[in-house]
Image (cartoon, rainbow, N blue to C red):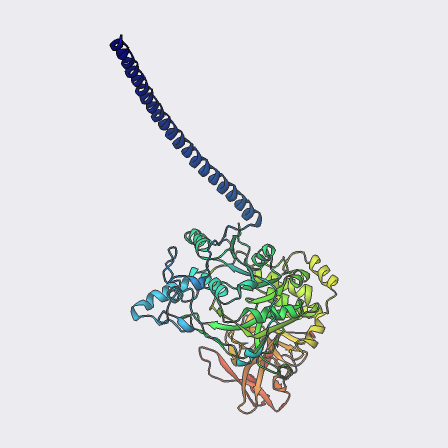
Length: 613
């Protein structure tokens, strides 16, 4: 009985072990299967999570893009800069879009404002490419975008202190087919030479440029290399400078509007002096000192002090004159603001409040021309002041001409007439004497501009002449004779006095008479013999020569003339008469003073029209 029992227990033991190991193997197999299932599940979950993450990110990006697109569309910006660095942190490289050198070294062309010197073999190409922009485009492209320029501030500027809480400005730059090198250097100079906290934004307004290849490149450059303060907007159609500036200002959010042309370079410390003056009085309109970037070679140069101020001529164009003595007396240091009756118009800062108060530019003005004189008149006549700030320097490329055609053929004439009718009162007749072709021109409705002037309670133009330009020559509106001055008479015509479109130089008689433009001489109520209202015959009693000169009311510009076929005598020395030399050259016959002789036919003069007739 013992063996069987022992065998039984043994068998039970073996069976139990078998069951144990079988169960253990099953468990292991089950565990392995569960692990595999868990791994597969985990991988699937991970894939789902990753997919969800990218979907979510894509959704947010898409949403953000749509939001950004909506925002930019609402604001009208094509692109806003996205760079996290300023140009001073750029690397020395060429940009991938225009191939321009971004940062140079001390040996780079144009550094320190020096002129670019071309190789002899490049000069023909330079000449051809100058036609693109009416400046040296080859030199422009060789100079780094971030180039150094001379510091032209006078030492008196070192002691000037500026407030720490100056107003923020929106810099507005209008361009049309501008060379990228000039345009981008303008923006770069503003960014690297301005306290960034005072720059609210830089708005680049593309006035419908048609060089398509540059548009996408410019878009990409701004996005990749300029900070978010730089924004680009494109006009859907050509507006012209005046309307484009107003459109740009409508998108601006800064307290100060600062206009720059698209071929400028800001000098060191240029911004604070402008903003300080505007902060001192929101009615102050300010200009930087206009330094020169030479159209050939792009040399940057200028003066450390202000010697000139802006004025206007009777064609309603801005021009420069030396500072009169009464203005010099008010200037104590070379850092003091310099009063200016008018502005050149390309570079100036104005508070948003005053810009809007004055009604901006006349919206009826077309393209370009006269808007600078209009804003100057309005500023002074309506209670403001216009100054040049000597401690602010900006270089500007002064081109020999505009390299594109206006889309409005008679824009300047329209602007002249609107300006004369709204702001010059009875003095508009002087403009019509100089430009009779605009008398019957339809320049559009000006009633809203007249209402604006009335609502602003502005001074009249006579006040402007007496208080802002007391030294201004004012032509007499009274005319004794007009229509051109003939040597001899209508029966014995030896030609007509002609300026040959020169502003100065010897007075001459040209054989052929056409009686318009440079030949439209008058005998004024002030006894001047003049053309274009403010160019007068001037006698030099020391050498008896007669020249064309700017009218100034002086005695040597006064003449006695009795009527048709009569002599013309200087009031200072009436025993002399105007005569012409006998020999006629290709450039006419010269006028001179000689002893009067009633028998000399060369001393007989006849105007085409006389007031008494």
